[in-house]
Length: 264
Image (cartoon, rainbow, N blue to C red; front, side, top):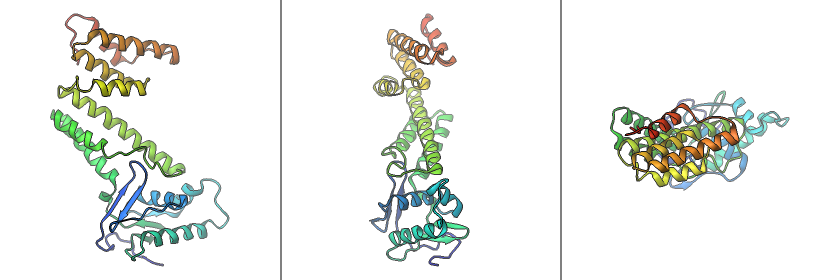
């Protein structure tokens, strides 16, 4: 079969870039190579979440058909691979290779935007730990700017890809929270108030966001607004979930009520 190599690095020197942080895109040799057929897109996504590594046939079958595979599932999968290979490799670039017991996209993981997002996320965490708050904020903001929408937005996700999108969204949420934290530590609490109010409205039960909003209001000299924000959240949590605010929020509230409150 075409592309029987099992080691990465055999692909001709063509420029490849892939995006998963939004609708899936794959550009190779200056052309958009992403297919439009749903199953081919789903197959391509499975290969792109493990770039340069072999994806087992059983994993592909589970993703594409879950618990209801067609009777001739191996033959059907082989046909999809054949069509995807022709779509990706009109010039015989060898992007999609057979690598028993599965298939592999023969690309460097760095060409996928997820790798750059993770690199910037880790960089931001290191900078924040070192106290370089402004640089950390810039790293997190650059990471978040890589996103153009929900991950794999144009894919009908099976079990594996659905779990992967949850994983990506959790990392995006963590990067957002750390970006806000870095901005506040860098003294940009006033500039973040609009962003925080918008995010807190869109995520009414996200206590981390509300704590950041209350801190930013307190640091901006808006103690009454901070207290009002806390009371609004406390009432909503009680009415709709029957719970009290988390320990961090309760401590912020106590600090706001005390004289010369040191909002951290």
